[in-house]
Amino acid sequence: MHTTRFLTAAGLLAAIGLSAPSASATIARDGAVNANAAARVNGVVVFATPDSASWSGVPADLSAGAVALNQGRASVQVRGGISAQWASADQGLVRITDHGWSVDARNPGVTEIGTDLSSVAPDWTYAFQADGDGTFDLAFNLFGSGVTSGLSTWNLLFAEDDAPGHLTFLSRTFPDGDFDLSGGFSHALRTGHRYRVSLLNQEGFFDSLLRQRLYNASESGTFDWSITTITPPAGVPEPSTWTLSILGFALAGAALRRRSPLRA
Image (cartoon, rainbow, N blue to C red; front, side, top):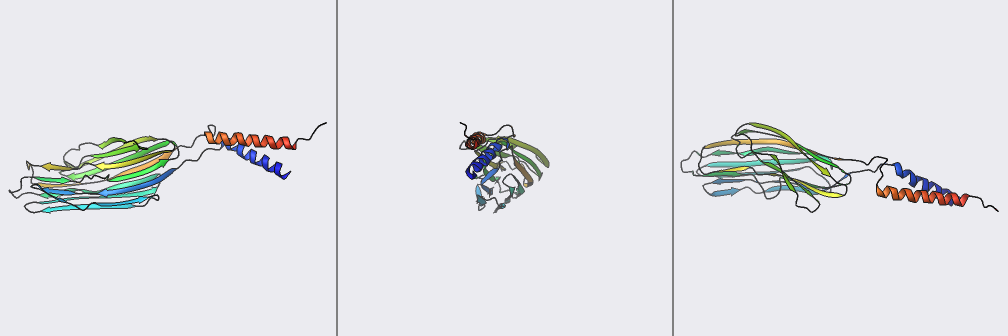
């Protein structure tokens, strides 16, 4: 009798799973930030020591910064800072602070200057797995001041599984001067697939004509991102739910047959 009741209860519970929605979530894999800078005067390049920070498995707040200073006949300082916060595996904020340079090339012996903030490694990257269909959304707001030519390009690389990914221009060349630019990016996610999202800057300039002897520029801003996964509606169960439900009905039927009295 107890066995029969157990089978009946188990079967009904499994069958009830037919109408239960499937939970979805984002699995965080790893994240990192990187900062780099280089200053050039008359062919001599001074590189800052690259700075980086990363996590694996468990999201954590990260920050990195770099400053390159080349002093001689001219003074060229190149600087950049970046920080990243993960409120959860589904939401976070990337902030850049005082990306830019200060140049004093008034010495007539200076024939060329250059600045570079780009890095081989992405400025920010986040790898995750989507355990539900949904979307990745990113909104950015960048603003700059000074002689901002060269502070212009941020790209986003979005890669799925082991594919190389595709590069999206978040912003193209800004006007030379103060700017304030906002925009966004969105990409669909598929259940069970792995993704890697990266921000890369291509900021810097090279001037061998020295059209200006004084350059001062600064850029700051934020990249606000979020992941939204969609739970399948109750009437459209996943294949695993169907399997569990069919097994549940079978167990319930077997239990009822055991309880039926024998007839002559």
